[in-house]
Image 1 (spheres, helix red, strand yellow):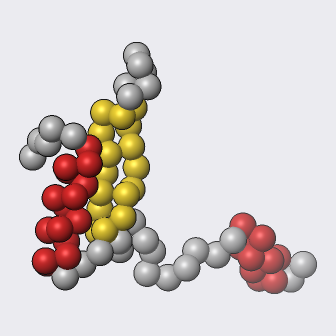
Image 2 (cartoon, one colour):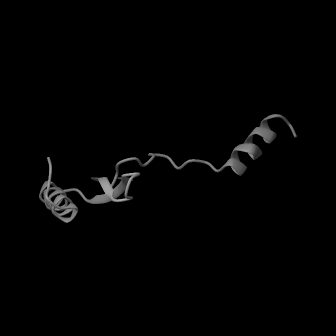
Length: 71
């Protein structure tokens, strides 16, 4: 679907989401290299891209590895 302005597109998707029973968030953008203007903007479900379980930090992973190796 194509819209005349970015604002129209975001408004359409936010209204659709509200009626359908979910929330939205702005995810990422792509800009043209020639002039730096936004050429694409993703508006996704607010759950899109999130992990079900939290990711452990690198420090926690190293500690776990050291514990398993007896260090």
